[in-house]
Length: 128
Image 1 (cartoon, rainbow, N blue to C red):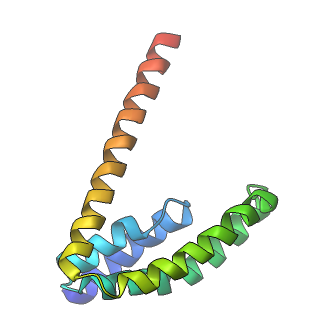
Image 2 (cartoon, helix red, strand yellow):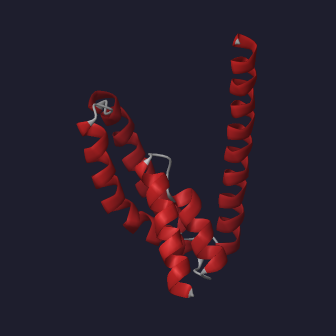
């Protein structure tokens, strides 16, 4: 049964990662809730699994002309630096605090997506 949960987590993370939405938003909760993986470990697994997913997804998006390499460089440089600092800082954070922080982030993200989707739906109906 555990293998099936890991397989489903990989499928869900891969689908979202391939779409550019961040598979970790699904992968990390699945690993911590259903597989009992500690939060720090789940985030590490997410980072390792992100490497092959991003390489393959990047090739597909570039092939389809959906890549703005010039703009991406200006995002990659500060993101790389800040992620290194974040990785060092998170080492001292308790697992429970990390879980709460990630959960709050997901709640805020979900709320924003929900309301922006409702607004878009409302604008679509008004345009008809």
